Structures are given as C-alpha cells and as structure tokens.
Image (cartoon, rainbow, N blue to C red; front, side):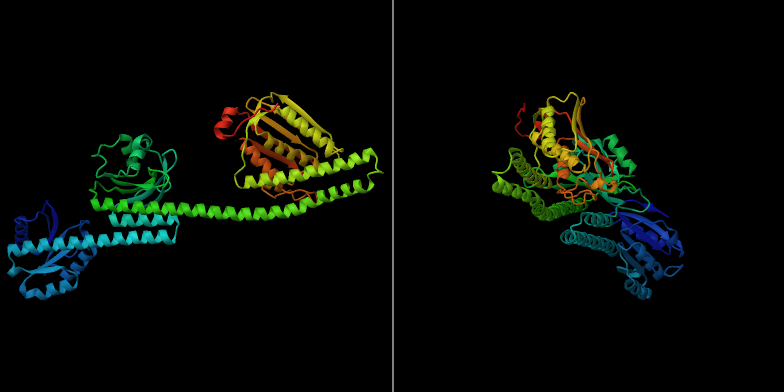
Length: 566
C-alpha cells in the first residue's frame, strides 16, 4: 500500500501496478485539485480486512483478477454510501461498466479511450457532484429535524420529549459522539437533562456538573449570545480546570450554544442552559453550518421551554381554580351547617328574654345575655376562620409584625375561655424564661392559640386539666398545649392540617375542619413549626415553636407597618 496526503481522499482499486501508476500520475498532475491517494489490490477478502476509512472518491478497475467486481462494488456502496464511485474498464468490457452503473456506481471511464484531461475532469466533477449531493442530504435531514422539532413543540408541549428528539437528531446529523442539553441551577451549577451518546462512551445523563467558569464569567458571556467552538481542547486557551472537567467526559472537541429565554419585561435574556456537541474520538474542525444548526435548534428549544413553562403555569392555575371552586362550595356547605346551631341558640335565648323578661331574675337574664354574646362570638370566629382559610388557600395570608406582650395575650385567652366555654375543666397557664418583646402578628397568633385552646376544651368531653406552658428560650418561644381529652387516632394525625379534615372519632361534635389549617399556615408564616402528638383516649399534646426575630428581620421579608402593643 502507498499513500500520499493532500486534499481529496481517493482510493484506487486496481488489478495491475502499471494502471495504478497511470492513475496516480494523472491525479498528481491535476492543476485544479490536490489528492490524498490510497492504492490497494484486492483478493476478494481485502474489503473485510480493511479498517474503516472514508474517501471522497473510489476508482474501481474492472474486471478484477481476483473475485467478483460487482460484488465488491455492492460492499463498497454499503460501507461508502456517501462516496463517488467511478469504474474503469476496457471498451471490450463496457457491459461491465454499465452493470456497475446499474448497481450504484456514479460514472465510468474506458481505459483505452482515456486521456489525462478527461480523467482529471471526471474525478473532479464526480467528487464535487457527490459533495453537493451529500450536503443537500444533510440540509434536508437538518430541515426535517427542525420541522419535526417544531411540530413536536406544537403538538406535544412535553419538554423532555422535545429535548430527547433534538439531541438524538443532532448527533445523527453531525456524526459526533455525544450531544446533550444542560440546564443551569440558580447557583450556576447544572444538570444534564437530555443526552444522546455513541455506544461505548460514558453516559452523562442526570449528572450534576459544577464549573467555576460559569460562576466567574461564563454565564454573562453566554447571555450575550456567545458560541463556544473548540476544535481541540488541548490546542485552545482553556482553563486547566475546564479541561479536566471535559476529560472526565472523554471530550476532545466541543461545540456549545446557549439556550436563552427572553422575558418581555427584561431587556437581557436569561440563560436557561446549553446545547452541547462533543467529539470524543479526536480533534474535529467544526463547520459554520454545524454551528448554525445548533444555534437555530437552541432557539427552537427556548420556544419549547417557554411553551412548557406556560403550560405548567396554566395547568397550575386551572388546578388552583378547581380547588378554589371546591373550597368555596365546601365553605357554603360549612356556613349553612355551622351557623344553624348558634343561630338557633341565639334565637331561643332572645325569644326567652323577650317573652319572660319581667319574670326572669337578674342572674337568669345575665346568663341568657352571656349565652347570646358567646354564640355571636362563635359566629364571628367562624367568619374570621373562613376568611383566613380563604387567604391561606390563595397564598395571600399576610403578616403584620409588631411587638407582642405574650403574657397578656395568653392570660386574656385563658380567662375568656375559662369564663365562657367551660366549668368542667381547669385551664392553667405557666410561663418560663424570657418571653418579653416577642415580635409577630398579634392577630394571627391570637387566632392560632384561640383555635388550639378551643379544640383542647371541645374535645375534652369529661373533666380534665388543660395546661398551657410558654417557654422563652434563647432563639425561640415554645408553646405547649396539653389536654386529657379524647385524643386523635394515629392514622388521622398526618392529615389534620389539611383544610376541612377532622379526626375520624369526633362524631357529632361541631367543627369546620378549618382551624388547624389556619394554625399551620400562620405558624409557618412566622417561620415556626407545629408538632402534634396524641393517643386516642389519652389526650393530645401540641407544641408550637416560634423563632425570635427582630422587627428589622420581619420588615425585610414582610414590608408592612409595625406597631407596639402594650
């Protein structure tokens, strides 16, 4: 075998050395083109033994002294489908050349009528023609991929599917070893969320990648539309850490285009991620049309991402609207049910006062008036619960921070509930540590502990103590509400804080299922936590932890006016 390197790669398969010398001389003296010439003699099995190598043209001398030339032609077509094949034969064997054309050869020359000029012109012409055909085929495949991607965006709206189609199609078109889609996280790390990789190479799908380049300057460069085109990572001026990262993925050449999302409210697009092509087998000279392909597809991916985000927001809004509709329906049902009992009591007490006012003692009149007052307070509490539950459901619950005298707040709650709600239970209040100058929303916290204390009383059907303990620690206030009531089934505890959920053992005890949902939302709005421990028939222990925060800290997160409550 002999080989000379220049521009176009040409394989000459001949049956005689003198023919090979003539063809080589003709090509070497072509003033319009240069050639890298490879010579081979074939014994019928040489095609199978030969390592894979691509050529721009193959010159096949027919008939071959060993083996079937047409069989060889078919093998060449299978292995070199994008290569121009020119058959050379004598005039006496022109029928072989015609059969070769029928089997897929692109042209033929008659050796006994051959001139140097005709030979050179034919080889140049066939190479150029085949290159044009190959480019047209590539362009058509690229257009098909873009069309398929566009249709997928319109029909699927599933981002994962769109990205999978894109990376798979790009790798096939570019003939590279890996194509991937990379999504940035807020800290400019990121994850490989789609990948197509040549078998035998490392799969990076799902990998989290951290590259200091993006934290330092790369993100800004890509936001400006930078395209990274590196033919050889060892010949480019890359940071050693970046090279080390690429080596982990066996990368030798890399082509990167940014995926930018444009917000109509922002002048500068945001960097969502990257579309990346890797060549691992060796260095590669990326062509301008390959760069353009990735750039165009990055734009289509950006459209797909924005449509997927819009779909997600729309679905979330529809789900929210559906949940809100169900919530409002449940509210109406709750109102009609929960209002009846207190209204009946109020009506009966008012009717008794109207009819028997003159005959009732002062003690009885005061008792009926207290009953009316208490039931009105219950109705007011119910309305407040429903309004707060609605705000929580819409994520519109707001906090108005102020300094709170917790000792006064809890003492007033205990006194009110002891006087109005129970004469069977003793409610004790204990405060430990420093609970002064606590900052929070007084209205929300009052609602929290009114609900928890009312529940402790309501579900303690017999006699039993109810203990409130407030502990002022260094960084938080911890409130314990313990009762000796009916308790909560263990299976119900995980669902207690869901709206309209109640314990399965409450029976006919009135309640809306709103209170604990509001309690959890209000506590979490303060940055706190609530824990419920209970055993059916043994009582319930609730712990509320509220962090101590300064007014400045609250104001940074919740820009509302603060006030001091004395």
